[in-house]
Image 1 (spheres, helix red, strand yellow):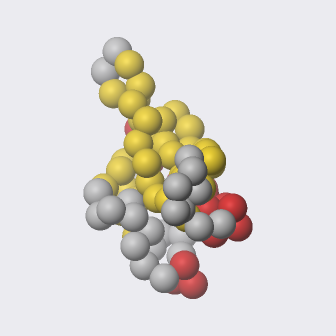
Image 2: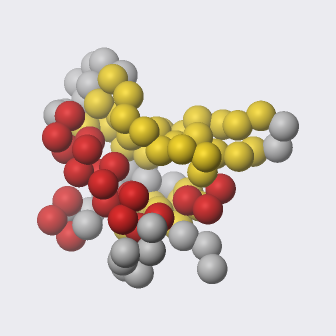
Length: 86
């Protein structure tokens, strides 16, 4: 069974196809991004999962993604939701 996450923009990402998920400083109004490197044919694609105003908020999202990928929760993870529901 696939492990899906809904990104902050409402797109679905299959965590089973991700090589890595990490934080990145991206600048702008929301300077912290959570990114996923996804296996996509001969080259891997980097997808943005969400952007956050603080490093702590980005780490909270990253931790929620890791819990979901590890199977520690069966609940669908939607990064558009309030972080207290993750």
